[in-house]
Image: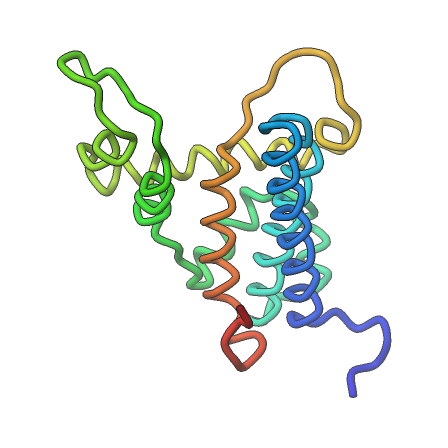
Amino acid sequence: MVPAGTVTAGAYLRAAESYFTAAQICASADQKKYGNAQLLYPIFFLFAQSTELVFKAWLINRGKSPRHLRDIGHDLKKLYVESWNAGLRVDGADVLLEYADGETSLHDDGEDFITEKQRLQKFSRRRLELEYCRHLRILAPLHQSPYILRYPQTGFFSTPNIRVIEIYLTRLLNLVWPPVMSRARPK
């Protein structure tokens, strides 16, 4: 039995799964009731919190101390880099292509209208990886700031695509769950 108050990778991962599920519920409700955009603050907060906890679960599982993680705080960029260096890899190109499978918007490429998937398939895998990382780079400062997602402010800020973040987190959870929990992630 683990003593009370002990930080474990499994506890972080279970909490990450809870935040992820809550974000999915909010996103679904937002789509059904409002047609999107009314619940953006809580959705992004929940997805960002889930991302942070998955990275921390991975790093604890790889031997990083809870004190080291406290020093990093809520910095998703630092957590991403440390997780990457500790062997956690999600193929961003595949995330974007999966997202494009369900996307119906059309783009004018100068000659014709093409689907999002056709547009993305013109890019190199490296360009897709950079495009995908843009979503995390946008989410990171929103989460790190103690105010933006918790206390709305006037002005403008960029937001990542909810569906891209959701696909990414699904893949992240599926990758991290087996080594941390010693079994496959439940469906």
